[in-house]
Amino acid sequence: MTLLPKALLIVATLVLAACNNPDRYKNGAGADGMNNGAGSGINTNGLGDPSDPRSIAYFNQSVGDRVLFPVDQSTLTPE
Image (spheres, rainbow, N blue to C red):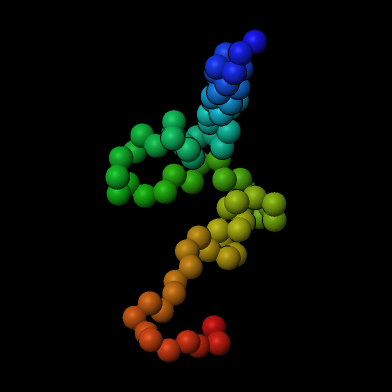
């Protein structure tokens, strides 16, 4: 085999591997589930039970899903 067919075979394998499981988060997370349009909010289906410490919903409830930084300051704080 020459170099070109080997390279094409490797690229084809990587492309197929990337498409193996397009909706692994189920019910709306990921490219296939984003049918709500811009500005429609976050779809929380399939995040799990908020009382289960291993679920995404528990993390969102206890920690939150946003981190806010003071961006209009020129001094550093210990935060």
